[in-house]
Length: 180
Image (cartoon, rainbow, N blue to C red; front, side, top):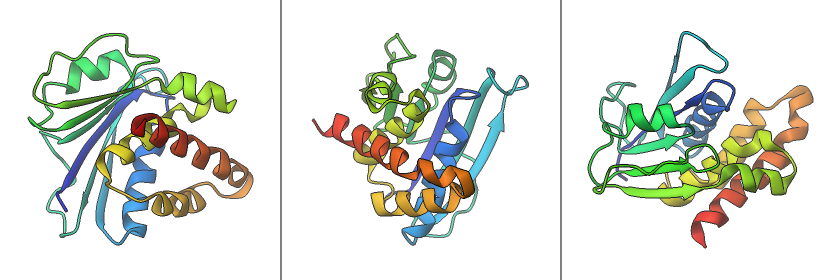
């Protein structure tokens, strides 16, 4: 397995941190070494937020990467900030329901998903982040759907446990959107 060096970025409130936590936790359930490192802009909700997730079969030397090989972009400022950093040959997932401009990169694979439209079809706009998660795992194979389910069961407890099935539906819808 190649090392997955992911940066996921967007506005505070778009669920970027939960997305990263779910990927890292799913990686652990899949028997891999993982790290998750959050980074918040000064404004918090509405400001920029990003996290770095590293997944590997080998022990991880550092949770930080200057040049990710995978990038999830949930808003335009994140596209502008991070697209230059992604390694040639890398993969960038773009949420086109918010990002209405093209990447300038020609040496990476770009996957576009209208996460807002898919989430709207599912009846809850708050799961757009999980639609993007589905697109990401369909493209990279970094974690399994079973690992993601276990991660939801660990992260969404108490009253939030009722949201597990909706989130799984959103992940599956994102996977299907990429596979078509």
